[in-house]
Image (cartoon, one colour):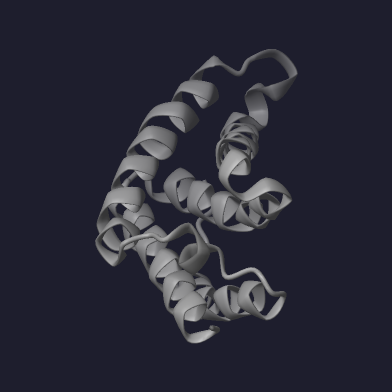
Length: 139
């Protein structure tokens, strides 16, 4: 399995606040409007969602994909998991939930490459805290 270099993952981490500011600049500070407590954004949401999606859904899909999907099962599982992540967030955020496709794909790729949940939890928390801060400062 080909892994992305550490520099790519550092760039992703550095880009998270920029994405958050972009969402706020578009007029939709999601985290602040949703009233997320900082503790939930920092710990609860990343722990729960990464445990469910990365440790549960994504590997289950990858192991069950066969036939023409077998060769790239990990990538297809990542895509389907990211789409599910968007679908679950859409009742609360409507069409804005589509913004979660890129973080979902990146978190899924990080899991696919490392097979570890904790790096995903940390990156997810960083993105949520960036979004939360951008929402608060954007008011």
